[in-house]
Length: 511
Ligand code: NAI
Ligand code: MG
Image 1 (tube, rainbow, N blue to C red):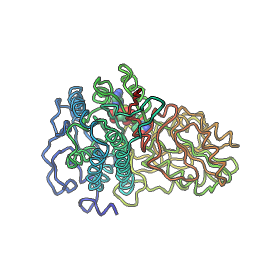
Image 2: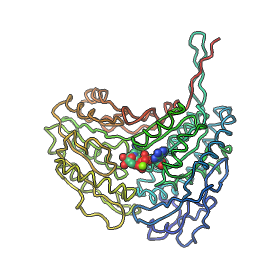
Image 3: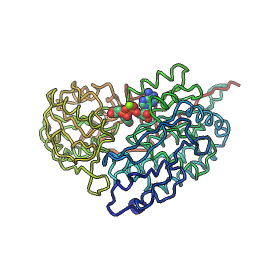
Image 4: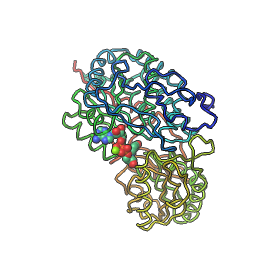
């Protein structure tokens, strides 16, 4: 369905058609971005600041690689602190006007943005398939479809912000926090951006976005849509760059009232420190090591199949991935066998081949990190069920074979640290208390799952998990439900009304 909307690209339908061109960093390029027959667009690159494409103040660039082909497919400027300054000034200047709009007017702007971005769904999926390696079919659904759904939800939520309350002699009102610095990761590069920009704009805040340096191209499509939608200048601004330079400058900027970050816990810690100097508000969506608890009375085949699919989605580069499969000892061997077979059946390869289930990891560095964890897991006593470092993978591209490790010690490295690759740890448990203890034996607390033939038992166990979300018996993802983590998985919530409330201050007026 989405494939039909894709712009034409050569019959080899390979992302290599991107090579040499820098379609997305060209602010005024036409719609012919995917045609290899087309000459590469004149190289021009910029930031989007104050409603215009502007040239960077420095000359450094970041090369963007296609992790399936290992080819450079684009270049974006590496912003400096001076670039961030300009963007923050633009966002500050735009703030009073945007904050003063009626909620329905902001909703109308977001609706236009949604329409313009929807027209680009095919281009978005294609771009993310190229810069991240998500198989195109999955990219269409998740990398393009999900952010469009979230943006649409904020069209509605923007029009109906939280009601004012009366508490005794006080009128309690809510106001936008101010200028938001949004720093986003590469694993769901448009979704993570929209999950910040949409609620921030809905709340009346203005935004400076610093997208991930590994996958900055899709953000250019968003800003093309911002232009077309005619959002007021400076309401949302784009500065690309590295974390330690542009990201840190944004997090530390005195003109930024709130920093909203998604990424690793280590970087979240640094950002919190930078924001602490001026007591700026911080919202953090960080890592996870989520447990998938499968009881003896569960539909085992279904639970394992869905569990493996969840763990390997986006090559395992998903913060909510259920990377620890906890199975009742009486069904453990059966589950390990099923998980091994399911994982072994995943087709690895070219993201543009419709048969591909698993693409590469985002970068050479990420592949080495994941390989290191597999080695460590085996050294610490885990049993290799399928995959591993010797399993065949394509010669080109940063692939790791889908890997299942059994008999994993709950305290070992692979059961404790976020791997961010297609690696599943299977662990046996004896009873409900034991399952809960293993699940909660983590510095993280983002997500999880419980499977049981007894729904009440499953919900009771879900309540005992110290995590921000739990899916019971395959409960569907709800884009309006609050999303975020306990413990070192973060601070604050995204999505839905809770996500909008993150961007609001509360004021009491006594009469
Ligand atoms: P990262 O957390 O370093 O990068 C995320 C964003 O933070 C990027 O935009 C980056 O430019 C920015 N950043 C980095 N250092 C910064 C600093 N000092 N100040 C301000 N901004 C900064 O993630 P990285 O290094 O790419 O991935 C490493 C690991 O992090 C992964 O293996 C995974 O375990 C975890 N991760 C978790 C994600 C999640 O969704 N929870 C997303 C991405 C990574
Ligand atoms: Mg990093």
